[in-house]
Amino acid sequence: MTGGSTAPTADPAPGEHVLRRAADAGLRLTRARRAVVAALEACTGPTTAADLAERLTDVPISSLYRSLAVLVDAGVVARVHETEGTARFELAEDITGHHHHLVCRSCGTVIDVRPTSSADDTIAGIVEAEAARHGFTATGHHVDIEGVCAACRTP
Amino acid sequence: MTGGSTAPTADPAPGEHVLRRAADAGLRLTRARRAVVAALEACTGPTTAADLAERLTDVPISSLYRSLAVLVDAGVVARVHETEGTARFELAEDITGHHHHLVCRSCGTVIDVRPTSSADDTIAGIVEAEAARHGFTATGHHVDIEGVCAACRTP
DNA sequence: CCTGAACTGAGACTCGTTCTCATTCTACGG
DNA sequence: CCGTAGAATGAGAACGAGTCTCAGTTCAGG
Ligand SMILES: [Mn+2]
Ligand SMILES: [Mn+2]
Ligand SMILES: [Zn+2]
Ligand SMILES: [Zn+2]
Image 1 (cartoon, rainbow over the protein chains, first blue to last red):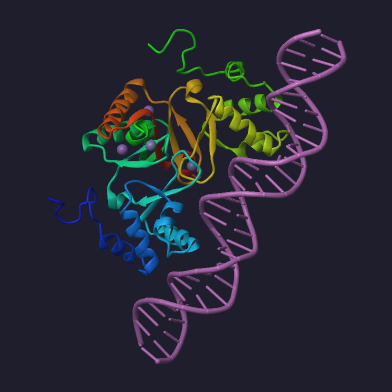
Image 2: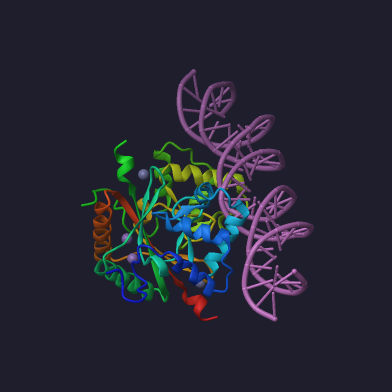
């Protein structure tokens, strides 16, 4: 029951799907871009360029950054900036579905967590009201939960 | 329930109060540090070092960054990293009270918004549940609301 | 195949931020 | 009030993430 047609909510194995989106945005599907998308699919949360580079030894760093920029532009990848100074990249919410982030203060790992739809509806409602009260047109929200991950608590 | 003396919720004019906290953390109250705290008090949301430098023309950039680092260390200032690459600084939530951020996608401004306590209790509950479900010990949450500010919508 | 446009890769470069170290304050004891 | 030790400062060097340049390569389409 993975979804009828193309539900933009929870597909666990996006596969070539993602690349098609990139192609539709007018990009050539090159080796580097395929590799970057595949690497991002394999991650459990937003990942730094350095981490990606480690996995993609045959993609030079300038190409890696350029591929990421191009994919962000095409709406396929999102750049997020939790609390530290270096950017992290993940597949866009259009593809993976909306989610929140658990940010470990100890090891820095960021884990995606999918809220139940009722919980997130509640949050979205509150957010909408807050924005409206300040004459702000809200287009989305990000929730980062700070704390210590299971691995870091039991060393 | 939060504690007797200094309610950490909503003081609209922290004044010397903030500096006392810094002193209690073992810092000397120098001209630069006073100036930085005063500048942060005057801002309506987290602010970049460049913006602060513009207001603090007599504080050299290396001192500005060092003062900020020292104040962050003392728990008086928080460094936040919304969606862009450069850091922003604001007084810590201990002082200003917990709040969320409206991030304008057009001009980049970040505005503080204080949720009603009932709304935030709801969010905190959801966040707590999500964290627990992943073996994560949550110590706080950040909500960033993305959109377009009133000023940018009507040019 | 041929060809023009898109893409690549090595490295120079930018810019926010941190570090260094000689000099100047600050707080505190006398 | 000074004197003094140690903290803080300031100019500039250094650093690192990320971007840009440009000559060479790949790709799609004819
Ligand atoms: Mn949400
Ligand atoms: Mn909140
Ligand atoms: Zn951890
Ligand atoms: Zn704006």
